[in-house]
Image 1 (cartoon, rainbow, N blue to C red):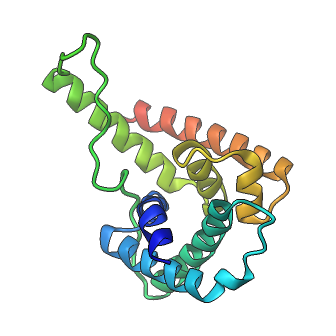
Image 2 (tube, helix red, strand yellow):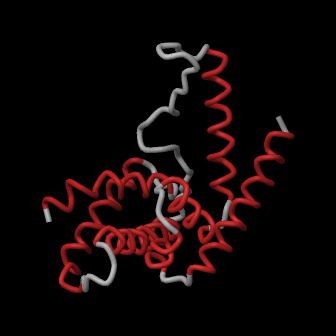
Length: 173
């Protein structure tokens, strides 16, 4: 269990943050996930990769965690990646982006987070798992217990909604 925690806890934390949890809520979620993993590890049959099984447990536990928080009438704002700044892309090695470029990137990141927050959970989950966690359609289907075609269509719809919302948000600035 210690090795599993060391290998996957930061991924589960990042997943929780991308699903819209505050840092404190994400830490609580990570603990809940690994308590569940400890209780259920004997049910792992090896049909899929251990990471896929763990992501499935994590998604289900985080869904339950979100429901409990919502019942408590708490708002769950979507935050960026866990305690990270936006990646810096330098044109020439060693070049730093100008303050104006950094501000523009931060504004774009805020727009994306706001648009992602507006997506229904079923679309946000597949998009986060695909685009931010880098999982395959097949693995997402296994994690969410969905046919691959459903995963593909939800990702397509999520991208369309996200693009439309971003266009609308940019237009309002």
